[in-house]
Length: 210
Image 1: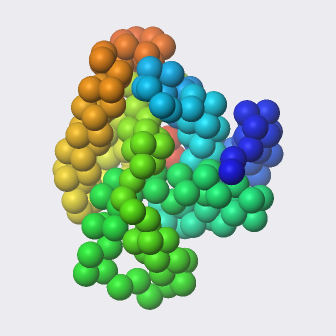
Image 2 (image 1 turned 120 degrees about the vertical axis):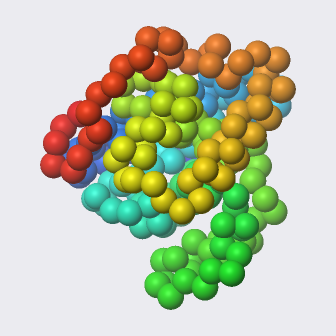
């Protein structure tokens, strides 16, 4: 289950009041990218893609936190609302390798245990999981960019983390997966991506406005 488009956008408005930042426009653009791609993929529901894409980062309503915390907060919030399909994407969007991410890893904190248990309970990523993972790699607050640009943007903000390159390779694999279904480049359906990919804004830092 997932909310209507109107409900999802209203949730973002409320969340923006709680925790302002460029993540809100980024979330809207993830939804737009997901909808545009889903329209080209047989069997996918463009409205569902838009809604779960828009809400993928809703856990950031709780404040400026790390990746696992906003993943967990978003999952918990959507489950409380009864939106299990949106909750799933809140969890899966940051874990491109799904259960393989947790191989040999035994978390100690409770929210990390919940994340691992949930991801490992899934039978791999479905097309909506993959779709939001790839859209998260192309949507920024000021529009859409090629994946390489987005990877650099994230690295400038957070630095190089272990296994980043493997994650990039996985993202390109997902990109090719959807392009085979769309019969065109994924970039063909993202508005003005050629222009926005050439922009180089300063990395956003907490306490500033985008």
